[in-house]
Image (cartoon, rainbow, N blue to C red):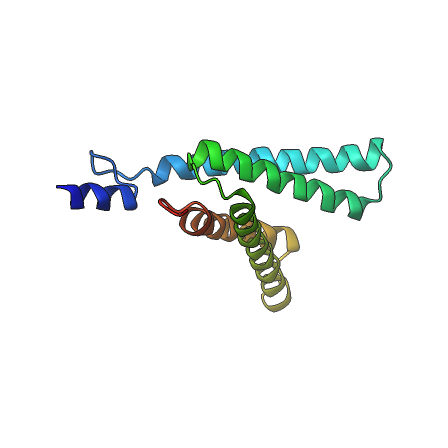
Length: 147
């Protein structure tokens, strides 16, 4: 019986046999929206109110969005108790950067090779990146039992 419980815990299966991945994914999407609003809002404030150059402001706001995303996902999405914050945050950032590279790569391919409009390419790239980001964060950064 203990082997079954360990299997269920390791794979996120509840007693009813349903995965908690759907609920986690919904939280993940919501937190992504919040962190995007922080990113965009801070970008606006830094440029318009503080007079900071837009690219410097974009880097600062994007990094702030990553920090917000990490903290909220750690607490609300994954209920993670890992206390190796620096190592875990570094992993979180690496997955986030891999998503950025995937996003830019897909946009480049669709615009250059398929002649899509860049905004349409961005929408598809973002959808792909969200799934990769969730997979990477749930299976690498916040995997169960990872100390």
